[in-house]
Amino acid sequence: MRATANNGGYRDRRSMKHVLDNVHGYIYLDPLFLQFIDTEQFQRLRDLKQLGLTHMVYPGAAHSRFEHSLGVYWLAGEAVNKVNFYQGQELGIEEFDRNTVKLAGLLHDIGHGPFSHMFEREFLPRVLDGYEWSHEDMSLKMIDYIVDKHCIDIDSAILKTAKEMILASSEHGPQKSMTEKHFLYDIVANGRTEIDVDKFDYIVRDSRACGIGSGFQFERLMETMRVMDDEICYRANEYLTLHKLFATRADLHRTVYTHPKVKAIELMVVDALCYANADLGIAASIQKPSEFWKLDDSILKWIETSDSDSPSLKEAKNLIQRIRKRDLYQYCNQFSVPKDKLENFKDITPQDIICSQVQNKSGGVTLKEEDVAVSTVKIDLTHGRMNPLERIMIALRNFESQMIA
Image (cartoon, rainbow, N blue to C red; front, side):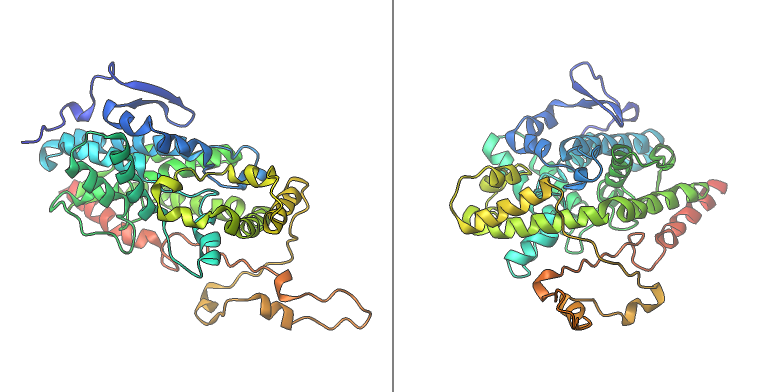
């Protein structure tokens, strides 16, 4: 029989360690989770900037995946505590559930590569000929490696379920081992409505770091979340708060994550890593967690200060030095495709750009295909052309009808 979490799940914190976070205030760390935090593999997250290369345009965006992971861990625990406080007896929330969700929140990004999503979406497909790799899958391998490497004593059921929760929003996520309480899978990575504590943390943290105002208040949602039909629901009068969540995320993509200068620097770093890959075996590290954890953002400094005579490394070093001197790839133009034209729109390629050149009779520069990079960015509210609130409103209406009844 597993122990049920009492008093809303809040425990005596005198035996816990605590850290002061600039978003959530004091975060309390249980001994169970310190076993993972106090490893070199988890501490590596300090050397992975949450927003990759964005700090070269927004200097304040130097926060790391370490603090984000602690933030998600904390919010995951708080979410379970809130639900348990109001519906604990009804739902039968246990200590096992709380520990599992918190562990998933803590370790959901442990498999991230350097430079945020650029590593898996831009670099690896180029050097591995379209090979698909995800940091979520790598997180599962890293978790197993950490447990084995450091002989961590933990319930195997907690570990198995936490790994399932990390993949909960993935299209190819594993079948849930829990036959009930599926709402727990929606707290860290929500594949049903896309509303989860991962977004709660990074939207507020990224906005604050970049100096961009955000009116989104996750505290309102945390306070009013309830479970109905095994799904997390929110009051209908939180419609605007929910819309602000998705709208703020979209604004961050437009103004920060895909800023033209950020994209130019990312393209240059991808080129540099491609040059250096043969000498350093960067891509090969994804095959072994024992090698992967050694890879972080400092690889640029390693290339930059290398004394190697390798021609490829010299090319990589030249690109990095160009970034330092702000001699960046030049942004040319952009085109926004109307929503009603998307179905018939063909992705633009460098070849299309070259073919559309007007022949310069005065002997000007003629661009070649390798001179052009095209970046296709799709920004939506997480559900493509659909309004994500249409899916959530079903839960909202059901919640209100039961409240009235």
